[in-house]
Image 1: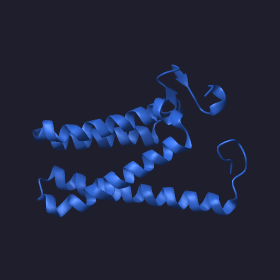
Image 2: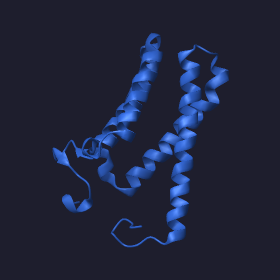
Image 3: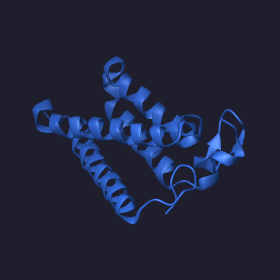
Image 4: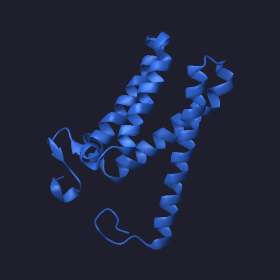
Amino acid sequence: MKHKHNSPVPEGRFWVERITKTTLRAIHIVGVVGSGGGIMFGLDLSLWFNYWVAAICSGVLLMSWEIIRDWRWLIQLKGVLTLLKVVLLGFFIQISQCKSELVIFIILLSVIVSHGPAGLRHYSIVHRKVIQSRKEIKG
């Protein structure tokens, strides 16, 4: 259990952070499933809007968590692809006839970000190499 600067994290704090982040991920997945289903099946907004809010709020919190933990997340593919998902959400208004396709594409990007190989997720678009830790770059 190491923290930002390789100092040990107290066990209690480790578990609080772990459970909090896992809970946020669970809320995010439920929100994505509920709102994605509503969008894909053309259901009335009132039936899935609360899921949408849960997905957006939990997503913002998860992104913030990553950026605060290490700003380099923003230049690694896992951060870049996550930001791309946010941009794609903005296209819901412009190309409303493709909402189902956008939902599917965003979900596929999510799988790549979450479950892709570390070499892909940790690849820095700025440094053009895999960045696993802070020691590898200055700043």
